[in-house]
Amino acid sequence: MAVDEKRWGMLFCPKQSARRSRKYLERLEKILAEKGVAYDLVQSESTKGVGRLVRMLVNNGYKTIVVVGGDSALNDAVNCLMERPVEERAGISLGVIPYGVLNDFAKFWGYREGDIAATVDSIISHRVRTVDLGLMTYVDTEGTSHCRYFLDCINVGLIADMMNLRRQTRSLLGSRSLSFVVSALLLVFHRMEYKMKLKINNDMVDRKVMNVCIGSGPGYGQTPNAVPYNGMVDVSVVRSTGLLQLLEGFWLLFTGRFLNHRGVTPYRARKVEIIKASNAYVGVDGRLLGKLCDSCTVTVEQEVINFIIPS
Image (cartoon, rainbow, N blue to C red; front, side):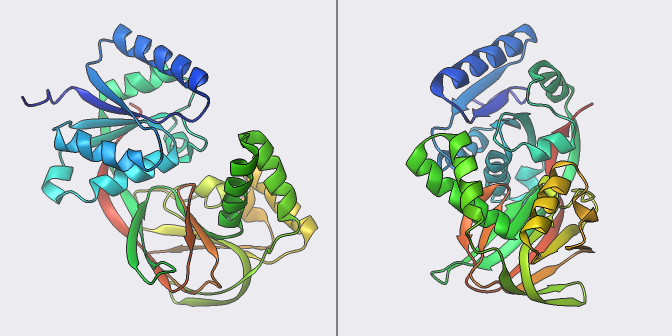
């Protein structure tokens, strides 16, 4: 039996303890019932399960797919959608109810994690905008070529290294908050510069840098002027600095003035080539991918995903 096209296929991605996730889900389901929303809900038990469940929803004919999660879950969803033919993808709309560690793409459109009712109302209104995706083509440490799409940003260098440290400390300590504090302290004794060679437009950057952020969206404050509908990406190249300047950079990042830092050089481009990156770690939309062992290219796919935005 075909699924009603107005029926939502919902994917719930828990981020906290089972008890807190259950309470959040109960609150969400109560709001959906009050507003008369017809939906079917599936729950991901791990990050690897997101892609499989999105494929299942698409294969079962759902035309509105709503991710209850953060940027990483959205990233998995758009990569699954990009596997489908253009004609099929054109009939599918992607929505988000922000419930992740990072919700930068949702925040860009004005969605707020605590305001479930307003977010559900926006999805019911079904105002759709076709957005761009960044596309990263790279080779992993085993020599295998990959393509990875992103909604928000790619980080190469320090920020991705921080993700790796946090993942390692969390596996040992268990606590998300404690692992963040410990990984921040370990960073003081960690490598903080990478020899990189980049081609951005016609400019060559060949020097030691701390981090490169390539954003189709806000980039967690590092590419604050980037928008996912102009066919371009913003790039922030952060030069190697001393500890005090590093602390100043984090302060400017948290206060929304990152581009004012003297060590940051901003660009806007249609194509970015990372020719050399000294085996730096790379993170995509808040998720660690691993190390780059070869060159990679970042381009933009214009107007390829139907995203539901606030009315």
